Length: 328
Image (cartoon, rainbow, N blue to C red; front, side, top):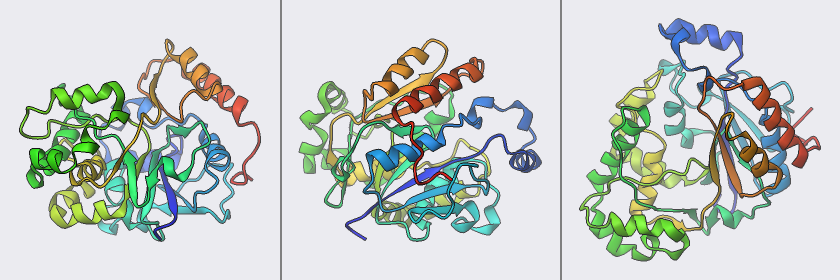
């Protein structure tokens, strides 16, 4: 399936009482978790509207869900593949409440094309995009921008560190840079090119910059990494909740960088943390379609959630007011 591109999106209904009950059975700290990790912004229908309006060429959308579905969804749409966790994860690891096992095993989704774009449910397309925005030939478009990992005690630090350890185990940085110099030092990176220059002296990869936007993947990377570190990936797959020794889907992205299996591209979108102070920026970004893609990160459990949710929905409705064929 070389000439087609699919989209994969993970979605959870954090308000589903059955899901909450199941989660509480396995999580002794269920009442202590951050409310922002699972709460629903009720804007998924705009994700589908955006796909239909801005990327109508996509072959199939694989909606990965615990089992619940949004009430608006046209379940019989020809481009929609509803994927339950049980459809591609081993039965013995179910249920899982962490995204990491799901993301590490995405390549096992039935009928998934060789080339696909992975979305979290807080990532949206805002402009009309061509397939070449995500892939050039068989290679994903991405930005191999170096970064330095900062120990801050957060889960994401441990995840990135674990992912980078895999890459450094199998690749020599200097050899990679020499072999793919034009990809690591592309002028398309703009000011971010200085990161690669500044971090070049370090003999190993110190990290890559993660823009928290949809990622173009080739299933080849998943197959290669699984063939090298099956035991570590399998261990993460057994984790029902996040653990510090987890690997994440970024390990496949970093592997694509190290192996040179990507095409350098310009900045692809914008990451914004939604809170009371940023909501005006969020509205302007959406209403003005000021970026090709956007990630609207829910990171503030104390925000005025209902008020901000309405403002985000109103902003999306201003650019995508018409129902898509994915809605009943």
